[in-house]
Image 1 (cartoon, helix red, strand yellow):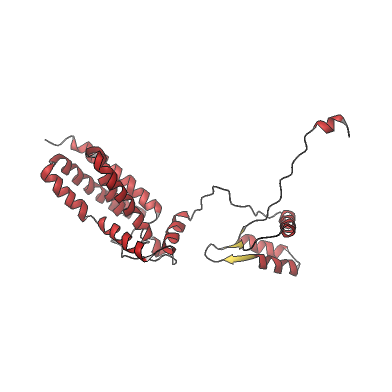
Image 2 (cartoon, one colour):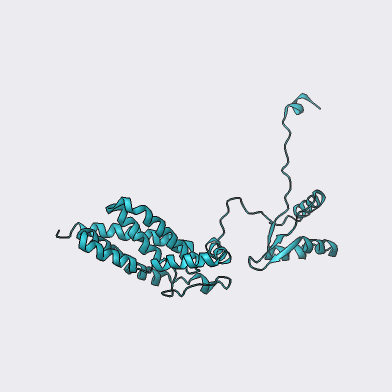
Length: 256
């Protein structure tokens, strides 16, 4: 070995990997490629079909020898069996979060989340508007304008996007309360609650924090009850902020 060859750093070969998840299409390609019946039976023992996610998953731990053999097999077949990236976000993440919450339901939480969503029905915010109209007329008018705006914008947006609610599109998601209307995007309950939060941020910052906690619980309850996706709730938060900003803009023209 020459001195030059000794000086060159050795290349470290990356270990071959055994895919933990295989799509249905990839699985069929795999089975068509492998002619040996014993190998096919072994793979069917190691991988099991997950009907909910429509893919095959590795169901048990492999010893060192099995890992080595399988990694060589997949490498030699040269199939596009890439593992998910560490921070990969699924296209169905919106749905998967709601489905997970539906599976984790407990009676005590069902009661709490139902109460939270009932608070967000709007009667509390209407009472707050009436209270402010008597004790702080300007603030009361701004909150009334903001709530009216978010309701109008909410109706318009819902009829533009016409997104079905989670339980309508997915059979594994059930609901605990009947929805107030047909469409899901954006969450009206969340929009109403965060309209109050952003209103308090401008007028009574001290009171914003307890209402922020309440608004977050209301938004979470809408997902927990199977009525909204996370993106519906996020859109509701944005809608609440936009409604307050528009109401503040028009409030400057009030003759007060």
